[in-house]
Length: 306
Image 1 (cartoon, helix red, strand yellow):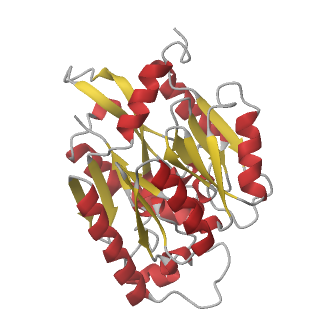
Image 2: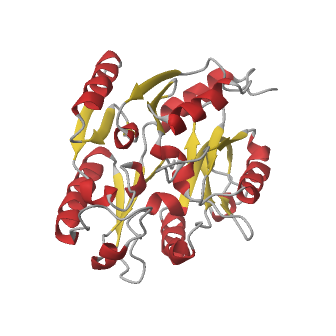
């Protein structure tokens, strides 16, 4: 059967997926002052303020997600707090080949596009398995593939992957081949000229299973145009545009939406959409991590386990 034939099943899975049971975050190292940056900010990173902001983020995640693990920072990898880039999860229907237990998802361990970030992966991989993800449901992207989790977004129709400076077609092909057995299509998106856009989720995130929050800029509209030209995706979403790129990246956790503080015009748009959907909005100021091109989804891995 095609995915369209079973769409109600996938829509239900996606709605369920918006209620994560598990979260992983990681500490912010003092070396974060030397984190990768697309361009140097006017004011350099203040690590003490960054830690305060990151602590507030962790505290909120702990309140909203039942099972939380905070991995320690690693001073040798300044970007290690951005755990999203090390793995991603895809909801499926199935059972583990080894335990015969029902599965909520499969996991893909990434191969980050920046060489300095590759050592971030093993501790997160180990943590995911330790938290209960069956090893036979974990797939690892291998050379020559490179992919950052920030370029990956799940929707009921397909897994979206952005072809950014960090993610290449070889990785997309590997992921698509792995997910074929689970009837999960993969759609790759050109990021255009990119501008000041690091990842796909720098310009688009899932507000609801049928609603996407999009940065109202060239890259955001370029992504939407590709979605609307794709037979699996055309006409399936309401697109809500916000004027501030950083505000297009939100965290949806159950009946809660976490957004960036400090963007009143975008905030009004997001709050109105959330009110119409019965969602509670939380705001966090994450200005220091933004100096290293980090957004809200970057700092956590959210997933479901039985």
